[in-house]
Length: 582
Ligand code: ARG
Image (cartoon, rainbow, N blue to C red):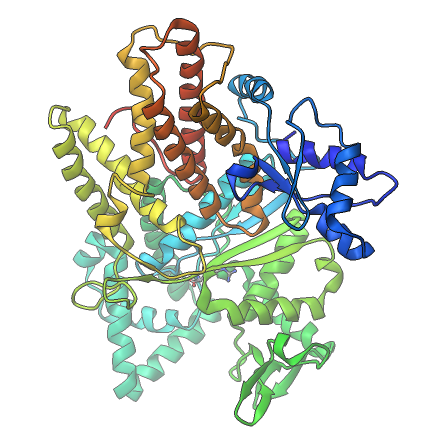
């Protein structure tokens, strides 16, 4: 059990007969006043119109925490502060050292997750925007699994839609086979752009595009063959990027997988009166049950609230992204009976998800009764100029090229830092550092904020970066190499403030990790790891390890060893590897 849960349980017992609540215990905001705190007396006093400090005293009088804490103290308006006893920290740390889960508790009941992430579009190179979905979704999946939950990782690739009309015309008339072999996604993107531009001025091309699309939708063999080939070529390139990033999926059910259900979805929505006819299309409007400000089918302009409907069938009879997502959600719930469905995309799709979740709730509320639905959205990556990150010539940056550049830049750094390493090892370290830097820079900011992409910053060995954390790990490992046979002890004795501070930080790993899933924010883990590394460095500066006398040395080595393990495990949960040297 984590320390906050342990304290919460004790407080709950002390409250017997006074109130039945689940007290919140958090890490103290100011270490001078203690290690943990609770505001339970304040919130209870408010509800019972009592004096919070008196209530706090009453709780303390009945509280039995002598084994783990010094006498609790009341602070401010009625906070109760707890300071852990060194002897108890020693005992917990010794346990942590033998715990393969590093203090991370298993859930009482494992949950089933479906995580929809990455989800790039066929015939288009994955661009820098897809990195956030891929890296965030992968980290969430790793964390959920480590926490003991079951996860289905679903890559909902965009493999259907009107773009295939243009692509098919381009494929039949313009494709350059040599270019296609060399860079399939680049060539498919080229023919798409070419035909799309031509459509604007040439009605005959537009007509051809429509016909090819109709043929594809009707199951024409030739067009289906071309479409499948485009998917195959795209998937091969996606897979090469996933391989580099160490990202895997359990299923890849693209949009086209749901085609057989779409007619039926629209029909049901029509029969239930959820979708109504509007200029030849079928749309969903507000049902007027919610507050306008929470109603995704209303939008405000100078004249007040006006309808902002979601289309589920276009006037030409074709279904769209919303229809597909409705069918997708139904399939996922019926197939995996998940507790949580998490979809990771950029913030521009917020309205789409609000509308489609609302439609589903009106359509099949009973299916949603037990599911937590989350659109986990993120902001944009910006260039130096504060505008969306582009190449100098204004083109979107391709993910594969970005990863190449990351490895190359890291290689230069490694070569400078460690010129004696053999070439192959240097390259391997550069791979780990370069990819780690890109992933970490992406995971560190609050996901909903935009962030400035900066090679200098993300590859720096100072500050809150992957190289800094990786280097911290390497430094700890080198302690063990430096003294042949140096081995962590099995008992701990903590006397220096820096030792205690480090031990307490280590004990927090199991508290921080479950919180990441509350609001799907891996940045909380990133920040924890940075604090841990900084706490480790302060300890290492203040407390000699190898030069200390035997008992102290072994205890400090144990602190070192657990620190390395938590850093390695924490980074692994963010999808980041560590080198053994750098
Ligand atoms: N293919 C979409 C894109 O590139 C993302 C799909 C996300 N998943 C979903 N179920 N809508 O933006």
